[in-house]
Amino acid sequence: MIFRQLFDAESGTYTYLLASEAERNALLIDPVIDQVDRYLQLLAELQLTLCYALDTHTHADHITALGELRDKTGCTTIMGEFTKADCVSRRVEDDEEIVLDNIRLRALFTPGHTNESFSFYLEDGGERAVFTGDCLLIRGSGRTDFQGGDPGKSYDSITGTLFALPDDTFVYPGHDYKGWTRSTIAEEKANNPRIAGKSRDEYIEIMNGLDLPDPKMMDIAVPANLACGQTPFRR
Image: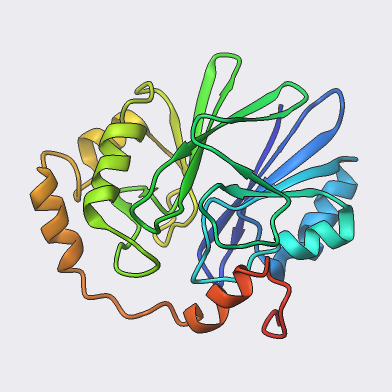
């Protein structure tokens, strides 16, 4: 399998490219609109055809590239079944598989950061990985104070769904602001300061006490992303 981790410095967003070696078909997870030309360049250089573009949730800190990639490549756009973005081509349910040649992603409903957040679990040979969006971050977790977020559901998603995955599963988050690139489930169980050794009530208290400012692009990004990035706000 071909794998690339791409980064948008402006929003601290990771985008992931997965592609089959033999068939040269690809998918992108959490693409950013300002990086579309970069994605298209990489696809061309690696001689890949983009088949799927998917978002883990409705982002508030950047505008998604789903709509533009669909228009430029004809790819299928995918989100979880509870998204309010009517523009997506396919909605996946909890435990449903997204299959692309020999790549199989299992959708995991992981609400808490938003009420429609999904993660995507991959097994490739002997390696396992989970793309967690903003649900579980490296040594942190996504805020829970807007878009139907709920700290109790966040705790349940992390400890009940993600921490149920094998300990050696690599964690690939949707964002990082400290230079981390990946972790593992075992690492986060042991070292995530919001979760390790914390009860559900303690986690809820931590999250409710964060008092974070709104993302600077939230008023633009959320309505734009409900239209897959295809609005007058897109630039």
